[in-house]
Length: 163
Ligand code: DQA
Image (cartoon, rainbow, N blue to C red; front, side, top):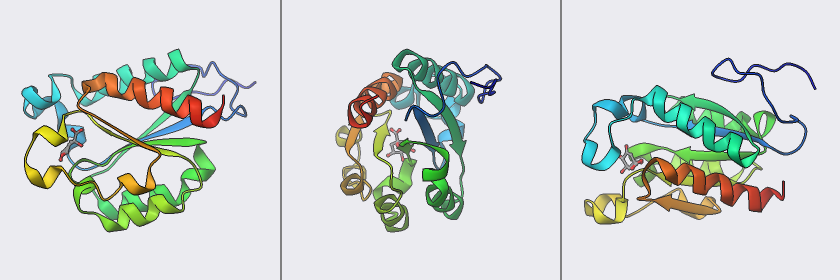
């Protein structure tokens, strides 16, 4: 096993060929999380969020890599290449989750299982957030569990990938 550097400069601990690479993709406004309503999102900065997710990945035996953009086309293009990068994907597409048929379509042919995560409880918020146009192309949706929802997403992927 080579010395592969992960996002936070750590040496990857797990074999990269063991179906354990998870791409964690954040969409629009997630980079601003520390400035958003703490009642919904807590007070973590985006860096802290990614570090917490990286910890959950380690616990589950996964190597996580991270991607964030505020540009829908970039998000779609990253989904186009995801099967070259990872064995599974965790997607929190922010507001796009509720209306981007382009992202929903792209999720249909990634070739790897996807889990949708929302930090806040979208079903307890405004009606427009109750709809996800991504859910039908994801194996599961985790919502309203705060940052710990990403831990649940790794557990679901562990099951799905049989790693
Ligand atoms: C979110 C929920 C969305 O409704 C919202 O637009 C976001 C974040 C969440 O993580 O709770 O940007 O996906």
